[in-house]
Image 1: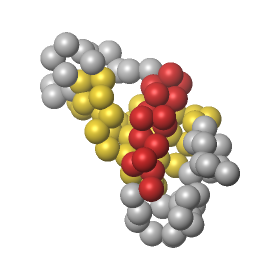
Image 2: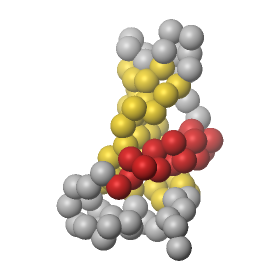
Image 3: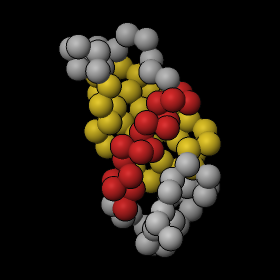
Image 4: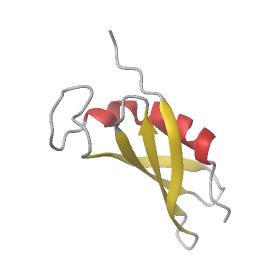
Length: 91
């Protein structure tokens, strides 16, 4: 069975209007918590740049209890769901 991340909660935790960067913390259905970092370009388009798994639960993919890069494969999927729930900060 392939891993299908489902975001159940997302909140904007920081926003810097000067450089267009902001962070969203997203909680997934499997209790994994991720921090997504976004940048906004001059045209106003939002692009996810980084995703980090917060170390509250083992990784649902590799089951490691320390830093891994497994969530980067699902960055676009998790990012789109998190933006739908939390929205984007006003400039």
